[in-house]
Image (cartoon, rainbow, N blue to C red; front, side, top):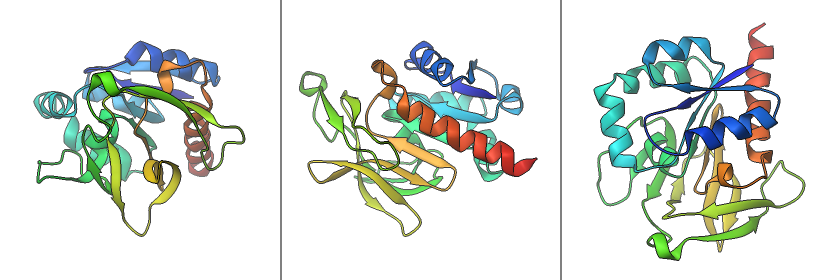
Length: 194
């Protein structure tokens, strides 16, 4: 099983290491054609406006929409969450418009307000270690979106079908269970296709 990590910006290597811990193979995705070689895709953190511009420049917008539209799982972390959202609060233009959520950028403040905590995530037994860095939050979810975790009453992890998002950076800790959750989604999709 191969899981791609969009390698335009962000903690690509750390995601690949976490994927490896699940038993799947992680690979950086730098060209649209490479999407045909993977069973799932992670869109890492970074700066959402920059990621969006680079995705447009290299033809990834339509390619990822088709990838997800074909049922392949996509996991967006931090800026990746913003990139997947149908709507960005404050009237900013959205990017992939795939997931029925409205997000607020930098909702937890600036870099110096970054923090770590243990989060209960639905579907994962013990709390997950979460690193929040200039993190967005999910202000609103559509009827098909399942909330998987909240922090201080704010939604920070959610799933809609084959789409998974987290406000935090699961790749920056040794806790790879959210990557395992995603790998299980990818495996379930592969099994269903066979």
